[in-house]
Image (cartoon, rainbow, N blue to C red; front, side):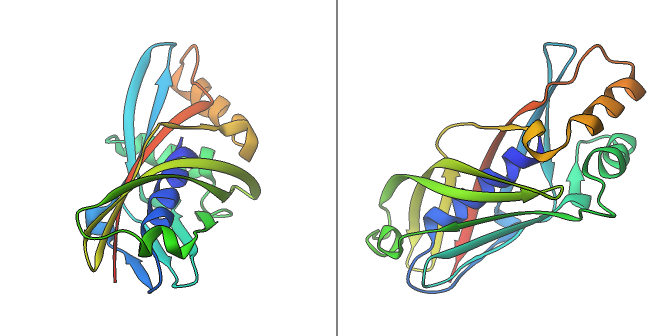
Length: 191
């Protein structure tokens, strides 16, 4: 679930930066994901901590400390940290992308553009390549907002997380927890 969130955040940041170093404003950014259990019970979760930057050469990186997962239920947060993410061994999710600097530099304050950005996500000791659809808005000379244009669907199996999902399912006594996780994001970058 958090994988989609991370991808969404990373793409958002990637699409918004350009020919100067941009830093993620975590207080004005959000990566969220949806878990679906018992076939049709959906819940929205988020990460409380995000770190990211975009260099003037177009190198984007997003780091999500997985211990910052926030499901709104403390015991569930603890179980996700220990049984799913295994934060002691795999503390964070990272997303990296190469953004063409002209994508950001061409935008004037008040302008918006859309792009598809190839990204690499590293999670739980595994790596996967994804394409993220983003909308980039130049809010001011020094502020960019990047958001997911379409839901990003992350497959937990690609990151070796299905065993953790199964442990959570058994512990909670649920009939099912989906391994396909929708992720969305809104990222704010500042010079």
